[in-house]
Length: 224
Image (cartoon, rainbow, N blue to C red):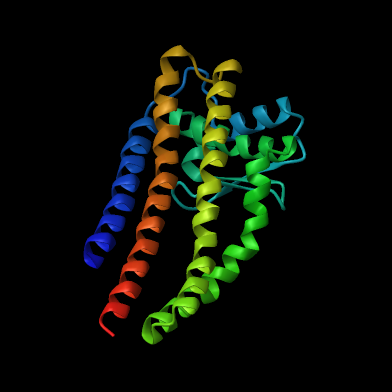
């Protein structure tokens, strides 16, 4: 059962990454009629929402795009930053969606930020506590370790509405601001959905990992 859970979790993550890579490869070659690059898209959206204090920077990597609220900075990978494709404008708009969430005080993103120190602490010692509890068959110690690593699971759970909402905003904004047209709308939706699926896969993988630890602990107790 343990090996099935490990392989299952790995398979889910790999499939989600392949779906994202396939979708990205497809739509990074489809140019938008507006000829707007990812950079221009981000700047236009930020200006519309009175977020001109946020800068847009080009970074290295592939699909390494993210929004840094503390630095008021949207980081876009080179292809997203420079190209005028469905993939580029969709990803850029998604990151702008996060900036808008912060401006509007979107509750799930506030909760996610509150969880960050707990996640860092739990990941630092949680797995060590679980390993010790499995070796010693101490139930209370195992429960403490389980709670500690579960903060990461809670973080991932809260991340889902944050990411889905940013994508929802992106789809509406891109069309309303004439950055994409009706024919390009479907491709943008697919691109954003593929990206969101990676977060769902990550959550499922984490659940399976925790279940695996529970089974290992229970089997260890049965063998005592």
